Amino acid sequence: MTRPDPRATARTRARYQRISGLYDLMEILPEKRYTSWREQLWAQVHGPNVLEIGVGTGKNMPFYPPGLHITAIDLTPGMLARARKRAAELTLDVDLRLGDAQALDFPDDSFDSVVATFVFCSIPDPILGLREIRRVLKPGGCLYLLEHMRSPNPSIGRVMDTLNPLVVRMMGANINRRTVENVRSAGFEVAEAANLAAGGIFKRVVACKQQ
Ligand SMILES: C[S@@+](CC[C@H](N)C(=O)[O-])C[C@H]1O[C@@H](n2cnc3c(N)ncnc32)[C@H](O)[C@@H]1O
Image (cartoon, rainbow, N blue to C red; front, side):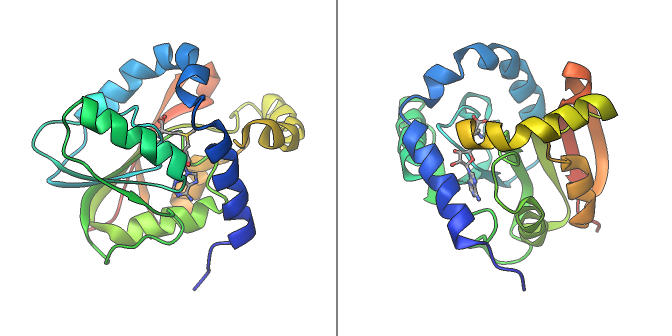
């Protein structure tokens, strides 16, 4: 069994811990674009048991459909503290926990759906995280993603590869992840990979575990 790299995971946690107080401010402009994407994504999610990975400060919470039992995890205590505050403000009953997508603390076949938005750019070992998600999904259950990833345009993709080390150091996010391919490598069937913006850099992905 592959285990998460503790040093890479600690680095990711430290980066998000540093920016946790500023995250919502930093995201004000991009969030204007993301809001309708979040709404459309959550409208597709089936329950009753749903897991959100990398809940961050809880930006998806306003779009949680009523009547679902939602468990939400994040690697970073500072981000999770903000999510707790938002859940209280919205009077939502969410089971919020510290946790690592690469080593999920749930039994096999626990959830009807799993959701992650803008998380797989920063998980140190994305395929390990995706395999864990597949393990905890019930057969027939689906993973719903909003992600930015490497451009399908080869020239732009190469520029993203060149810039990636700098961007990771500055922002903590990889800009050249091949997330649709990673989802397939983790054993999912990709039901949808919809281009949302920037020539396919931003995508909505729905990927399901076979029955
Ligand atoms: C860019 S933020 C996105 C937050 C939120 N999903 C959103 O849409 O605004 C990435 C989040 O993923 C979390 N994260 C990174 N690696 C993780 C991991 N291995 N397991 C769980 N959460 C992780 C970070 O702590 C951070 O809160």
